[in-house]
Image (cartoon, rainbow, N blue to C red; front, top):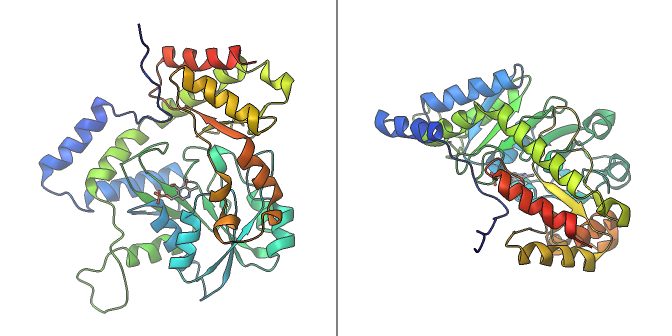
Length: 352
Ligand SMILES: Cc1ncc(COP(=O)(O)O)c(C=O)c1O
């Protein structure tokens, strides 16, 4: 019997999610409204206080966090080069100048030493908690630098509290999803307040440039429903990652390693990323998975590194360059069945 392919990602939509969306459709109020407000309140509770502003995407949240922190025209914002190009887009849209900085080979997060060397005077930096590992916010913030914590891949972990603001994404492949969606949170509420003013242009007493960056209540209802099971999502992802760790035990003796930092206490692993001894071994493992009908992805191709996109020389970010040639991401999501987890583990166990 032919086994069904296993995609790299697949959302988990439960009956409760469907009912939550259906009740919004029945209510006759589809746009930003009571469910969005409820999501903001739930999020503030999740973060232990502060204020949240729900938005149309994680990119919108980054853009409004930069504006809320008073980014000046052409001001430099340091970013990890091993990150999604949404960071560049948000900085450009807000009128700033992105400066990509190399990452650490261990957890793939922005390297405080490289930051000091490359962008020591930058007032602002965006630090991504890459694939669920914690970026070292207090070291990055040394000297009073303001850090936007990019939690688009780390919802439900300990991250988000140490910076000047935190941003989240609810895109279809994220930890919880509304199809699309984003949110900005800050402890003082100043950034969230500024975002709240900017996200909606209708019926304002006075004019200044604003935009439509709102979330719909349909999205908010689905996100709220998924947040209800965040603990179960965390537990399932952690168990699956531990299963892979055990299955890959032979690989650790042959030069393979795994991204560090996703299994620290309370962390919610977003991706399970292996680092191969070299490019050919990564290709061989990807081929073994493909043969078994299992999709893997290269989480960040070399040409996608942010310093490459900006035309900076490869030597400026050697660690990220190296990682981009050796990393491979395996399926890791709660919708995986036990059978599927076993099939993935079997490939890890038998790979030579
Ligand atoms: C680290 C990171 N930052 C920002 C974003 C942008 O989020 P969105 O796709 O919701 O605009 C994403 C997701 O794509 C991301 O992974």
